[in-house]
Length: 384
Image (cartoon, rainbow, N blue to C red; front, side, top):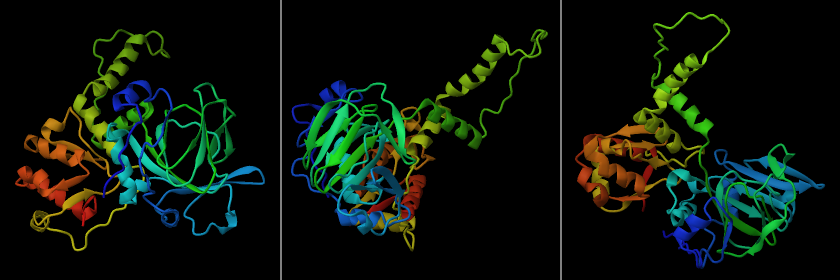
């Protein structure tokens, strides 16, 4: 299975990152040459039938915006115009869709959110809105007109309980996308897409984290690991004359307690690693029955083939802890020791693992045991 080659017209990757990434939108004509939909509308509708797949319908009725959450089993009531079916994290459920992530490997995988797919009938769209993340909208079959406005203090309002829209805007981009075209939109730029004919769009989104999310993850980690429980100590303090006051020295002491945790690089690395590797959407896991024993896995692997990572599984290492053979997979920290540093790099940097890639570390018992557990759980599977 090969991924479509990404070309940025006359713009190099370095130019894109320096001039456009998180700065300015860009239309990339024929970003994917000879593009073919990796999934059909019928297959997308099949995903939207599943309870564990996040899906939405957006349409207008009597001039009012409406939105429904799946699963869905029929669409006849919607007619032939003005509606859109959206499936989130489609890369978790389709290996072909997951291939769309590979051309964007010039960005770190921890920033990847998901691949969202929309199928829209003529006139369909979700209305003018502003995203808080970067998105590469890859046009599949059909045609869609996109309008993008400049960043600014655009008023937002709820067009529906599940739809946040923005006020009308003057476009700085007004373009019709054809199959293989890509529209990159950074955070904060209002945009609106309207389908001209039945079409498929594949949106590869990249999202960062807020300070509140990071601090919340650190707090959860401290609680889970029972860290940071030492109470404030202040021997030799002067008498307090104003009972209701929290003075500057006390505030500094309290801040120092929190800062001590932020200054512990290993604690922060573990909290961030677990947070970034945790999947927000379900994975399409197929546990093995009967499960492999470690020796069986190695024998089967040695016969050929490759272990393929299931779509959407998040596997990371951090510079601060990788020397100790530490990686973070689906929210869990694994430590295999310094001898396994190279194995951790191979696990996290590659979507497919041949036997040869990890052969140098297959005498490491803890690593083989963990790999067997991951395969039995469905995190990796043999790509036949």
